[in-house]
Image (cartoon, rainbow, N blue to C red; front, top):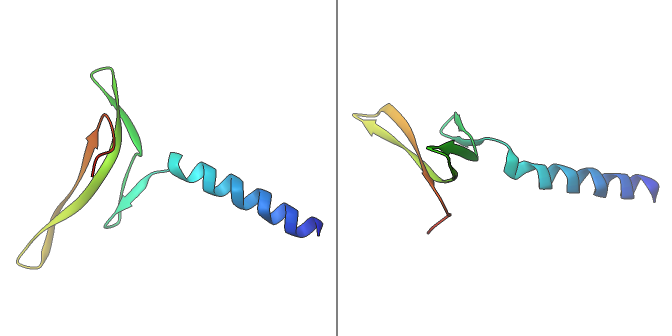
Length: 68
């Protein structure tokens, strides 16, 4: 019973801390939140550009608020 409670607490801590971690897109890590020009921006999405089968670059989109 105690082991089950300990596992539940550790799981909750891990999942609550997860949004503060970096976001990974195609092996490149991006911060979940950044500050630019004094404004806080949130990671909204990312993707990669390929050309002739080669990965050219990976990009991230940061916005003031998450959008669809």
